[in-house]
Amino acid sequence: MSKLPAEDQFLDLSDYGRSFGKFLAKSLQNTRFTPIHVTLLFGTCGLLAISAMLTGNYILAAFLLLLKSGIDAADGELARLKKTPSYSGRYLDSIFDFILNFLFLGTIAFITNASIWLFILAFFGMQLQGTLYNYYYVILRNRSINGDATSKIFEYKTPKALPGESQKSVNILFKLYLVFYGIFDKIIYFLDANAYKVKKFPNWFMTLLSVYGLGFQLLLIAVLLTTNQLSYVLPLFAFMTMPIIIFIFIRKKIIK
Image (cartoon, rainbow, N blue to C red; front, top):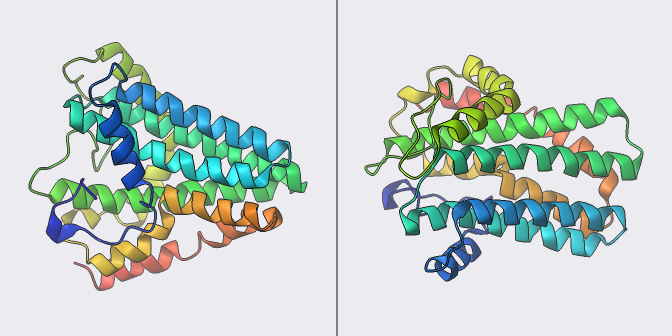
């Protein structure tokens, strides 16, 4: 939880890969590897997980999904160690996650012969859940003493490139980010537009909400892979969307 000061740290059920991410980042700190290379590595790991699913190697696929979560934590850690934050890396990370999530659920839909509508509902729900978690989490990070260099509460304006990155790359990746995530950001903002005014989210609330974090979502898929219960993946993510209203209700009525 290096992104938060001690007083704001909470048990993040989706962040189990952080220790491995820190280890990997530390190992690469004095090498030519950049955070972008690490992002490409977790993308490759995700594609290998899909290949393993398609060939029926579900245990291997589950391992690769969890490994992907660990590598995913390493690009940001490496950027902090090398003191090379970038908007390009931040948006590329999110774009890769979106594409991989689509492919993960699409592959499971193919294997289980699920309907296209269940797949769409599950994927939409998965992304909306992650957006709610990230929305509150980024608000919390922006409230910290050290602030946050690249994550913004409201992503609506192309940021100015940071030292060492191309403005053209930032422009392109930001536009892609809006294409992929814009609708989800707008929905969550519509449901809780005043959340940014909250000074602090209770640790218990963030821990409960962390079941919507990508790491925990991939953990659920991994568990169902290892137990050969793939047919439950899409209904589970569709069902998990409903408590979003409960979380927002708690935020509005209790956390102000």
